Length: 247
Image (cartoon, rainbow, N blue to C red):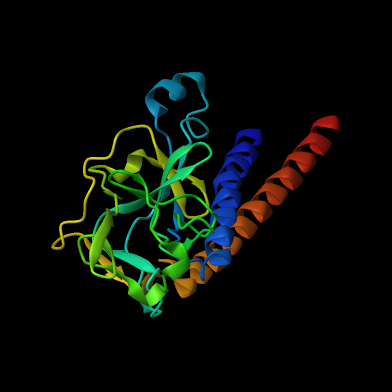
């Protein structure tokens, strides 16, 4: 009976974590370039070992959080400094903690002409941080960025965007919001204009589907409530059994 209570309780823990993940996804449904998170729950991973100890139902609960890197829809903005990546790849930026990667191309120019992210991180090109010349004479309408990531000012190429690619996106760990870090080196440093295309004047929206997330939240709430009722029922039954044992 006690084992049954623990079994119900252990099943409630990943549901609570899943609820937190869904809540965070919904909070970022309008965040440019956001990639939804999800949980993978592996149950009874080492059941064969645990059965000899009599706790097979409670062992091997492995909960892992992962990120869904599927593409979001494109939103036309008309701002020449808004960029989106169609296909695989990430923009690279220099954060205080090192190089980070993002699909959020909501860029702007700093006072010294450096191309920066919404958080103020310098955007990286193939030769380092991108800085546009003659800022005082520059109007945003003079900036052109083609499908391979070449940045031109008044028809003159001044920089090449660094588009980082990863053969296995599971190496990317979400640092905060739309930024990721990796413990391995990227496999590509340029867009090819075919599989990976840079779109100027567009932004990639969040890949969170609000309806799907809400349905999952409702299902989780109901299953959590069922597990809670099961614990209360088993606890009540245990109390009755103890009362009978005292007679």
